[in-house]
Image (cartoon, rainbow, N blue to C red; front, side, top):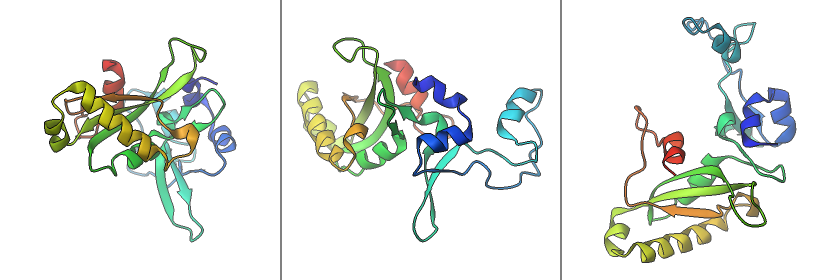
Length: 189
């Protein structure tokens, strides 16, 4: 299954593929929000016939019944073996580091080698200012960050570990609401 096909799966198919996750797409009756202006197809995608809003969020429910939002269906990476990776989970581990200011995770197609055509997990890192100041040489900076990512990745299941680490000296691009833009990061690659 290709990553692009994930968006076309039904809620039931996604839950079947990733059974330890709960899709909380119908969290509240949405009375104020009636439709997208002049976009009936988009309205049908996000509002159920009985008036519920599909949020596109993925969440886990713990043993005590607490709900934790873990990602977005549209961000889910499906690896060649069928394993599912939510970028937000990997990013949360990366930004625990005192060396990392920002991290964004996305998938890319491997272009050469025995795994050519397969998806890989990429993490792009913007280090903290003191780390940028400490390493004037880009090669040394990348070496230090790669070592840190490798250490942090031990907290993740092996299939969730980034296989490609990119380091930038520029802050990651942001959306209008100041969130890191995964789309813009991926487009700049």
